[in-house]
Length: 368
Image (cartoon, rainbow, N blue to C red; front, side, top):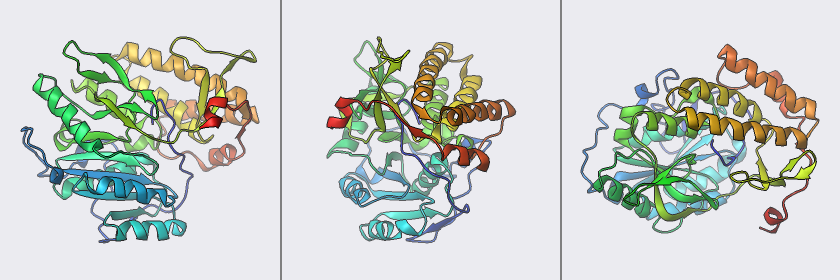
C-alpha cells in the first residue's frame, strides 16, 4: 500500500475467520462504508503521555508465511503487551507455522478467505482494542523491527505532542532504506508522507476520530488513503528520527525511457515492480483516492498521480504479454468509474496470472 510495493496476496478461499487460540469471531466483520463504525465501544484512552509496554499491542498480517514470521514475533515479545497475528486466507499450508506462532504466545486469527490487507489489519486492530490496547503497531510478516523499535516510535510521539503538534500515525524515518519524511518542522519534528503501514504506530483515539482502514480498497493505497484521511483531519504522520525498518522489497529493474536507462530528481534509476495482479488495484484505487482527496490535497494528489503514471508506463514496458497488463489497467479504470470495489473479478484474476516481468534486473538489487 504506498510508495514501496508490499507483498502480493493471491485470491483464495471463503470469507470468515477462525481464531486458533480462542475461536473468537467477534472482530471479523467490519462496516465497509463507514470506517469510523468499526472501533469497539469503550476504547477511549486518556491523552496523558504516561504510556507503558502494557498499552501497546502489535498486529502482524500474514499470507502464506514461512518461519521468518517467528523471528518477527520474537523481536516484538519484549516490546509489546501482546502480539496478534492475522492470516489472510493462506489455508492449510500455513497451519504449522501459525500453530508455532500460537505456541510462542501470539494470538492467531486465520481468515478463511483472502480478504485483503485492510480487512486483515482491521481484524487485528479491533481485537487489540477489545483487549484494552491504547496503541497498536502494525507489521508485515517480513518486517524486521530492531530492539527498541516501539520505544523509539513512542518517544517520537511524546516529543511531537509536547511540542504542540497534533499527531496522527507515527512511523520510522526509513523504511527498507527509503526515507519517509516529507518535511521538517521548525522545531525539528519530522512530518512524513507516503508512509508504509508496516511499523506504523496508531492510537486508539486516532481510530475513534478517523476510523479504521478502508476495506473496499482490498489492497494497495490502503495506508495512503488512511494517511490522507488523518491529514485531512489535522493529524499528520510523524516520523521517528533515525529509526529504520528493515523490509523485503519487490524485484527491482532498471528504469528505462524509450529503451534507455532513465532517472531524474525524485525519480530513481530503478523501478520496483509489484506482483502483476496488484496493478489492477493500483490503477483502480489511485482513481478512487484521487476522487476523494483532489480538493483537499491537490498538490499531493497531482504529484502522486504523475509518479504513478510513470510507474505504470515502466511496468507496461516490462510486462509479458503487454496486452494482458494493459487489460488490467483498463479494467481498473472501468471499475473505478463504476465504483466497483472489493476484490477484482475472477476473469481479471485469470488475466493477471498470465503476466510475467521481463527486463534488466538492477545490479544493486541483485547484490543484496
